[in-house]
Image 1 (cartoon, rainbow, N blue to C red):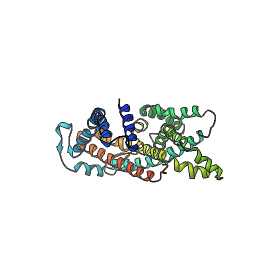
Image 2: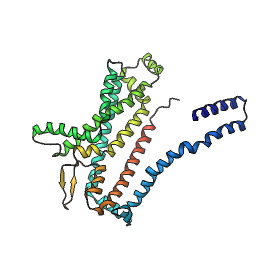
Image 3: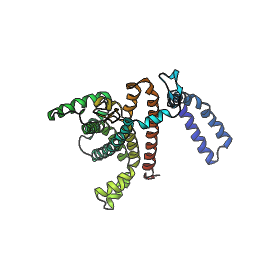
Length: 319
């Protein structure tokens, strides 16, 4: 029904421009679309409000409270935020997550683009390779973490160590798991971007005598910037939000003891740190965990918006 109305509106608009229809007649044809707007958008807006806006507002309020359950919340101001900033484990998790997100951002996008570029060169069996590279993305994060935990420990046991005993092994183990899972997904996006390049543009580059490297850097990459923007956004946000693989692969181990007697989990990322604060400590720390969650949201949103603005400014206008 909606598509039919849209077609009619398009025809009337065309006739209006041609001088066959008055503006009042066009206005009358637009009314049915406005009439059904609440019918189509109402459920979506209601679901968004119930599933996001209301819980977010409640979570923001609870970050300023001391509570065990949501019904006994006691407002205490910015105390939870001060405790969060003074928490050595939270500060360590922030810098550890930032380093992890940066390394995974570079590796995943560079490797995914290289594979996508190779698979669009007309090699035999390209569809089979695309399927093989994409399949790891279908495996759940928890299952993936446990599988790779066994693989890494099986290899490292030959050297009398474990992924849970040394921080460097935990870090690079998480990098390998993330790359193995997400490269195939980003590859599909890059392939779509490369295949959408105008043929006349590529032919013009060949006629002008551009080398393969010049065509790649001066034609292909600038025109694939929309795909790069999407992949960088997904990779960066996924890197900061990583939870299930971190929980299954290392659970934050190994531990280090601070001078004040507190424990810092050296491979614990931000999402896992918030989870452990909420469930692993005393019930009085739940307000601190909620404050950490708000800070986490602000951090991810700010970094993602900055990245989107930076990469979109480099996109080529093809209109």
